[in-house]
Image (cartoon, rainbow, N blue to C red; front, side):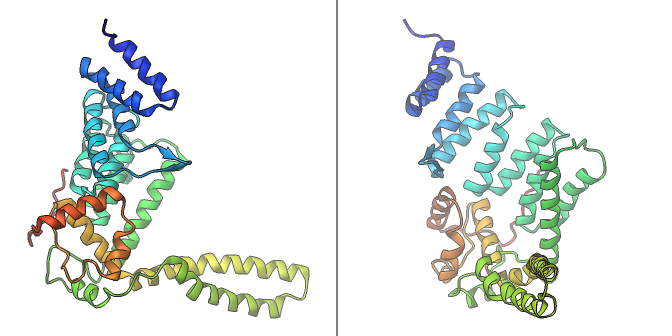
Length: 327
């Protein structure tokens, strides 16, 4: 006699608790075969399709796993639009793993329409718009947060998240004030800079701190020690000055680091455009260079796998392509 949906679901939960993820996944699939409207079983399928932790570390999913999990998550939010974690997991898969930024905007817009007072969908949309340099639409989203129409609960994590995004917007706006890179335009002057710098890796923040910030802080500390270090109080003051100088100089010099790595940031945007459109725009003379390899190495496995398929298709991003914004 075939087991009921309820028993199959309990067996799936039990298998998961025992650490038998393959059996748990198979049982969850049997649940949805009998009851396609079982949202929690679909959620389990999404989670169990993705790699589990190995030796305490989270293994990143490949393209096939990401796509299958995303398909299950679409069923979850269709059946239970207020599911607590399906939207977050789906947003991470669409944007970070698959690189489909337009679909990411649509995904979070669906969530925003369902829960107009929730801050996360709007913040996530702003993050996507900043990545692609669409500051006009980003300002529209920011206005929703700041005009008082949205009820933002007193939550330090949410407040910190809003502050981070606002700072990101301001830095990006200043960064692109003189020139905004549009990778779909093969004549954009940014491509010439990327070609010129293609044999150089971007400067890492650690290297920048060691070669630029630390020497300045060291000189300030040494000078202060000469004048103040003759007593215990003076030594404490010097120590405090060194710490304060480090944080101030680090903060002020990040703009310089961004300028030095402008070519890498531009190439990163080109990768976003390719993954979003599903067509290539990066010249072959740049792809495979030291700069390209350094930038693409920071992307997740599913993204790199999908991008490889896009490049193999040999289709080019239309020169007049523009981001489709769903609001």
